[in-house]
View 1 (cartoon, rainbow, N blue to C red):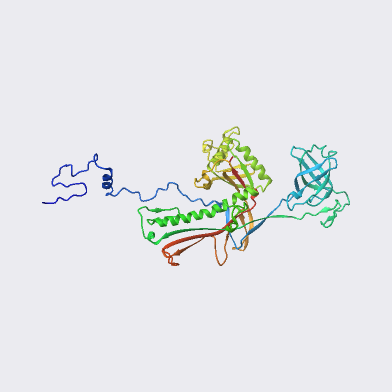
View 2: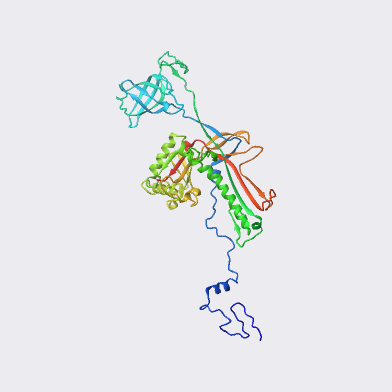
Amino acid sequence: MALTPQFGTIVPSQTQEVLQSNYLQWTDKAAADFADFAQQYLPEIYEAEVERYGNRTLSGFLRMVGAELPMTSDQVIWSEQNRLHIAYDNATFVSATGVITLNPGAVAGVYNVISPRSTVVVMDDFGAEAKCFVSASTPGAAGTITVQPYTAANLAGAGLVGAVKVFVYGSEYFKGSTTPNYSGAGAATGNEYISVDPQFTQYQNNPIIIRNKYVVNGSDMAQIGWVEVATEDGTGGYLWYLKAESETRLRFEDYLEMMCVEGELNTGGAIAAGDKVKGTQGLFAAIEDRGNVQVGFAAATGISDFDGILRNLDTQGAIEENMLFLDRQTALDFDDMLAAISAGSAGGTAFGLFENSEEMALNLGFSGFRRGSYDFYKTDWKYLNDASTRGAMTGPNSIEGVLVPAGTTTVYDQILGTNIRRPFLHVRYRASQADDRRMKSWLTGSAGGAFTSDLDAMEVNFLSERCLVTQAANNFVLFKGV
């Protein structure tokens, strides 16, 4: 008896005819049979990954607005100038005697330096003020001055109530007078001139070590896949570990900037001492500590809120050019604010930016504008829009943008050996002739070209040691949600 060969569930026939035994019946076969039959054919495959998130890297902000400088110590210290003129807030007074208690000791290291025969302006929070002559002064941390108003019998007669602000605008002496000095030694009689020695404010930050590692075993390195690798740094091919190594590197490079933006000093006491965590002060923490915070900026109240920011900048460094790095909603609020000025009762005041063309002004994506004596350049900050970072955060205390002054300061460049102009943000990294820790990477193991141990794997190590120096934080503004 001859044997008829069979292939799976299909029985071949010597003639071309449709039989129950030589074709698939889709109505009475189990689903598993169809799956087995279909899998013998090569599927239509898209080899390359679809880049559904576009460029996923977040770094670049500090490269645009900051400078990188090496350092050789565990700590970086810088000093900033104090104000030039003499002023005191929240002073109290006795109207009948004219004695004003400056109470400068409430701020550490601040003393009364108003000399007798100075002329001062005394003003309260309700619009009343008096020009006064200082007849006596007691220097020190609990200093007082005795004043006599020029145009009123006493301070109450000038309409002053509550706490007052005092600032010096000059002095007045009689003919043939002298200005006796007061050195600060011994008790003062209240009639000596007080020499003002400048004080500086000192700040410090410390670098922290940030590390990462990627590990792939030797067997996986020799295995190829059917998906073609494509990453933001140009890595390509069919070796999947190349993609993982590349993304680890890109993620680490983002961390180098993110820790300079988000870093916090360890002051809460929750971290165990044995963990040896110092922390570092990032940009957001520096602005909240020493800068300005605008809460709840919106298009409806935008121009009044923004003018309030300008009035505050006038009291600080008044740096003319500034950059706005904003999330999507706040950027749109700025566009709406500027569009309302252009199309509202102001009558097209911004058309000059578009060659006086009202049609061109309908493109309401404003990238730069001038308000008062300040120029502002607006751009989106991807870090605030990305859903994997702050882009998913809304509501109270969410970070919605930051205003960065474009001013510069003179610093000594250790590499060039000369004084050069630098922006206010400095990324300081540890480096010397022996070791540069700006961005280190090295291979360990016994695969991928490394021959350092008997580990059948390739270990890619990343390390950096750095911190951010935020100088003149009083000129920065942090926008936060409500």
